[in-house]
Structure formats: structure tokens, C-alpha cells
Image 1 (spheres, rainbow, N blue to C red):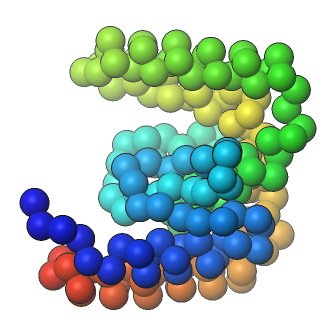
Image 2 (image 1 turned 135 degrees about the horizontal axis):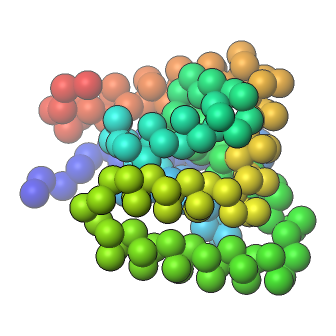
Amino acid sequence: MAKLKGYKKLNSTIAAQFAPFGITGAILGTEYSYVLNDAHITYKITEGDIEDLWMAEFVAERFGYKVKNIFIFSLLHEVGHHLANDEIVDAIADFCDNEKIRIGEEMEENAGDMDIQKKLEWQYFNLPDEIMATQWAVNYAKAHPRKVKKMWKECEKAFHEFYKINNVRD
């Protein structure tokens, strides 16, 4: 597999969009996540993943908000973890961590069954820490649609450059 070029610049561009929220870095990975110890976010650049579709469906049903850009929304969700993390008491954080382990194990056991996968994914989305992060993302996206659109434009430019450097059609 060829080494990817330009990922540091891509990471830097993504991180810059979320720096106003106290995010200190962004790392290209295989999923969206928030790294608590150093306030980093990770992101993926795949499109059309079923988990992304389920997340958008969940947000529409639970919060009455139609996600316009799952990439930016997912990263706003991770920012929500960063900003709401202090509000979660230890007992609830422990509950969420234990449930995430259980859900992950059940997902592995039922890898081929999409109905069970979706049910488990929704259990994950409904955990208290996930709800808080999603609520923050929904509130921000609703209150700042132009900022969200601008974030995406900056990220999109960086993606096009990244794809071009790596000879990938976007």
C-alpha cells in the first residue's frame, strides 16, 4: 500500500476548523472519536457508511434535525464530547464505558446481522454521554448554519487537495 501524502496538512486544516472549541488536533483515522487526554478528534474520509446513515436517521428521529453534512456533524458531535465531558458524573461515565464495551462485544458476535447491528448502534447513540454530545452538535448546527457551511467548504478544499496529491478521484 502506498504511503499517503499530504495527510499532515489535511489534519491541520480539519483541526483549525475546530480549534475555537478547544480541540488541539485532528487525526485521519478509521472512525470519528474524541481523545480525552489531549483534546484531539479523529475522523474518517469514507462516505456512505451505514453507521453514518444510522446516525443521521437517529438525529432526525430523536432531535427532529436533518443532518446536512454527516462529516461536519460527526465532528461537532465529538466537540460536544469535549465540551460536555465535565458535566458527566463518574457513575454515569462508568455506566457508558461499560455499555460501550458490551455493545462492541455484541456487535462483533453479530457482525453479519444488520438488524441487530442497527439496534446496537441505536443503543450506543442513546447512551447519556452520546446524547449530550449529539444535543450539543444539533444545537450548534441549528444556531450557526453559515459557520457549519464554511467549515465544510474549508474541509472540502483540503480533501480535494489531499485526493489530488494522492491521485484519487473524488
